Image (cartoon, rainbow, N blue to C red):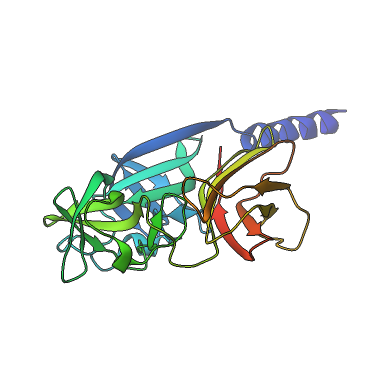
Length: 283
């Protein structure tokens, strides 16, 4: 009996040590240190463990922990990588140790909305007098010019007076951009599908996807799928009509519920063969 009692105490002790409460955390602040060897980052003075395989992203690329250091990003002098930029980290605290399950970073969050005032001879698009420069660094690359339907446009078609919005970071007197949207400019590729929003909730199985079509004529049948299985089950289908005000274009909006929300969605225009994919912002 004594032997069984002692064994029971040992099992309870092991169980109590192995099961520790986990507290969720979220942090947004300056990224001041990165240690790829120890797999840690420091944000607002807090050391956070970033185990191998933890998702790390900039606004336009998937990164590794080492990518947060390396050569300076354009316009940022001698500052390595994303240091002194902003990091948004979510994760859990166990036994006083903060461990990330998702990391997002960017040098700064700078946005300009307004009117194209000039397209320079060198090819820079100027918005509200602010010169923009397309980022070529693979850690935060420029994704190309798109219109308000999310479909690509040629820079040659951008003219002063166009309504524009640009995102990036401001350094050295210019805005280094990873995204720019130009309203009212026809797509450079016809036909084309664009996705402007993809948002889902894992707990309720709800998914919303919005976007537009260009280079079309008449009604169009479109289908929504999980991009990981592009020939698999259709999550939703819709018949959309050509916009009478802006011929050759159409807008769409899918709302689906009761599904396993995919990480990436695909929208196919079956009538005028073309498609687009987008990552889903899952909450």
